[in-house]
Length: 257
Image (cartoon, rainbow, N blue to C red; front, side):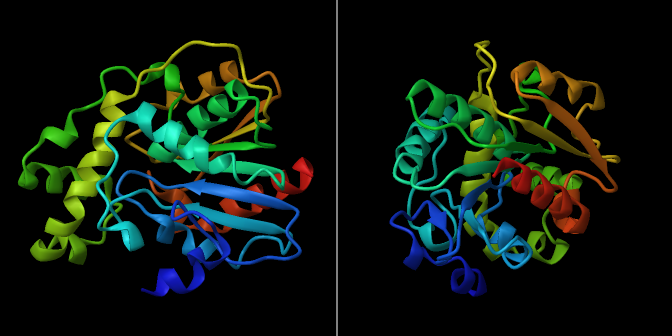
């Protein structure tokens, strides 16, 4: 409920985007959550960005205010639907930040914008994800039993233990989480011309879920420069200790204007 106060749809024409009015905005930062995440995952960032940057957190169906909507299981379908939303927000320059699953979504959506002749993002932040060319044979986590899936979620350490222990709550959350893992399983990398978008790759030094050798290959996806930045922490470093991450984001966004 608290997330809805900050990330309301009152400033947005779309249920996909949670934000609030920012008359002085000169650039939008669209943030794409990790598997099982939501727009609320980015709530603490809202007050940490520059006053001219409007944070727009993406809310996928099946969670938050969209709990009653069926989640999306197919990656290509998700990109098409998000592309329709982005096309209506072309009045300001924008950048993408995606974490884990969100990094792949942001990357593919940037390519979608190029294909459709839309202005590309000014900057692309990909966090907690190896280069997409290495995404082969994703685990079939969406097909696990509830008990097995809960064990995997515990291994990722991104869900509070008290939430995992709440059977009634997890029964409500698991369908959207399964859908997100299905998105990863259905993802297919397609070689194509490089983006002309500057990229920042963010990685946790202790992230056991991302092959460190796969991070450098993000540089093969852009002609506009790509830098790797490592931070203390595991797979959810960007949310556990966000200060250094946000300093990087603010610096790169200032350069993008």
